[in-house]
Amino acid sequence: MSATAKKTAPSAEDIRALKGTTPIVSLTAYTTPMARFMDEHCDFVLVGDSVGMVLHGLTSTLGVTMEMMIMHGQAVARGLQRAMMVIDMPFGSYEESPQQAFRNAARLMAETGAGAVKLEGGVEMAETIRFLVTRGIPVMAHIGLTPQSVNTLGGYKVQGRDDQADTVLADARAVANAGAFSVVLEKVPQSLADKITADIAIPTIGIGASAGCDGQILVVDDMLGFFTAFKAKFVKRYADLGHDAEAAIAAYAAEVRARAFPAAEHVFADQAPSKSNKK
Ligand code: KIV
Image 1 (cartoon, rainbow, N blue to C red):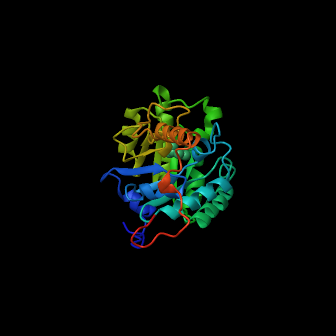
Image 2 (image 1 turned 90 degrees about the horizontal axis):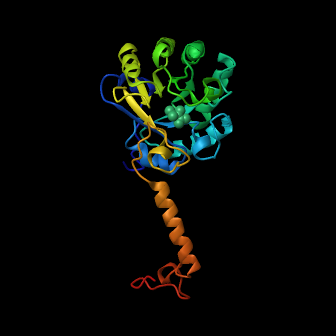
């Protein structure tokens, strides 16, 4: 699409209406160039708080701040013409009270232009979700493995196995009933993801869940192979750009040391080139 043909991004309602129709495609993004690459291909782009781990070298998402989310949200917004932008509420910005959540969600949307916020939690966040939605803030929920709760979950484990399944199902029902327009299901067993998808009226967006979810999301640096600190089982690497980047950097370093770069075509003559002989 040309830069001048700006379409209206889908709204939360448009995304909700995709349930049971076509699979919803989404990825995370944190920068303008990456947002541009995915704009044509994704229904929505998430400015995820995973930014803290994949771009800032943090060991969890707990250190991500409102300021970081706003800066990356603004960058992503500059790269999007047609996909919806959803932005994560960082740890500590919404859990205290619905009022705190509203204040920070409104700031994230006003300062970045995001069409919705995402927050982690199920039954315990239902009141907050209802508070936001009834005041004009579309909410995407996130249940199952909620990385901001890594310290109380005891690690990045699969959630909802065996007798935990009813807890995750109750979370899904609670966020749907509270007015969330969609819900991310992270790292839950496939059969439970399928059961939830059939049970609730809003789209499920799977990550480590099931191909039967209404949509899928991956962290872009994972699927492109830029993030190499570890690879979760649910990540499929569609490219190995981290390896390619390192090889390119090594080739550059070797050429600089050998004085092979810059070559004749990269340097400038004393005289400006004539129009017919541009050198
Ligand atoms: O922050 C993030 O990238 C996310 C996705 C894993 C859904 O929340």
